[in-house]
Figure (cartoon, rainbow, N blue to C red):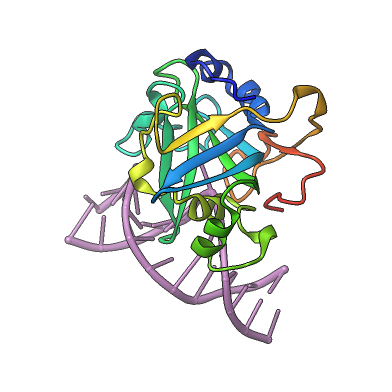
Length: 193
DNA sequence: ATATGGATTGCCT
DNA sequence: GGCAATCCATATT
């Protein structure tokens, strides 16, 4: 049963929202194709006390969106090759977001295989850059509102009671390494590692 | 104007 | 496990 999320869902404290997103579905409609996956791994980023966050030094042309209204997409380009997608959280002006790091493929698997140039189910969406490629997410998704967009949105998924959530330090960063702000579904075969 | 390094991936040994 | 690829945001000169 699809549940419509409200703005207030994303305006809550970022770590709490990160946990709630696990088990929900990220869905896109790109080029006439629906693709989706269950969110199995996320990371939180926050202006306050988090030197790894793009928002740490306050709003810049790139990070301004993290200081905007919750529930919007922050897409950035990294290492000259990949896109990563985040969801802005908390009240406007806060500077926080949640990076979607891995999905379990659900709808549009054939389309995802074509976009990823592989037939390996396990490697379609088990990383932040991979899932963007599989779902057709790029810089023109920047600023999309998950509550109203026709191209990208969230659908409800797994019951809260069925979730087994693991916690760890975040991956691939060099600053604020110790913060345990990565969350994942423990038994998922589709984690980035 | 230039320098630095990155919230990654895939290929190599 | 190591490491190159390759664009760009940001800080510094």
